Amino acid sequence: MSVDAMDEIAKARKSGQKVIGEPVVSGLILDDHWLWDPDFTIASKYVMSPPIRPVGHGKALQDALSTGILQLVGTDHCTFNSTQKALGLDDFRRIPNGVNGLEERMHLIWDTMVESGQLSATDYVRITSTECARIFNIYPRKGAILAGSDADIIILNPNSSYEISSKSHHSRSDTNVYEGRRGKGKVEVTIAGGRIVWENEELKVVPRSGKYIEMPPFSYLFDGIEKSDANYLSSLRAPVKRVRTEAT
Image (cartoon, rainbow, N blue to C red; front, side):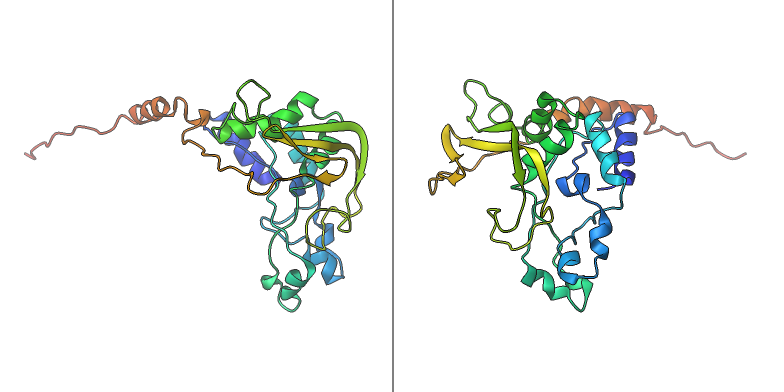
């Protein structure tokens, strides 16, 4: 969510540590001026943890994403309606922390990163899908269009436009932190397990069609880590064998 956190990740990666950086959509696109709105209903819907930062942080995170310092984009989707947010009207500590992002992620990242020329279409697939699957150790079952993969596919029209609104989104919440935002790059078809589940603005989900996906431990991030640890420990020259000398 911040330049400071990104800098720490960059330092760790430069020193050889196995570290990944995952900005969320709100951190890439929004800034904290909304939090100072005098209308509590508006300000409260932007309350989340870690908090949305001032102008400049988002662009720095975009740059880090485009240059490989950060590796993937998540949503941190945790949305609350205006009634729930109003719990903190007299005490900001009681405002439920969280914003939306699940439905908007693919559209916003395309418009912000690809349409602007900061990322290629190939890199877009990597940061939103392939790298996620690799880190969760479920690649190539997920994150790839290959024989034997799960056939979870979106068809995004780069020339199609969208406008985000709480009146038209598919969440039951009456708030949306991206309210009124317009852009290019719209998902027009979604295929899950080889079945079309979204097309022509119509949801075609079959109940109980979801499946639990087991994620085995020790993804590629752990490759070589035992040898690296052994080299580090040996560099400490420990344990040291000492001998007792008698005082004379």
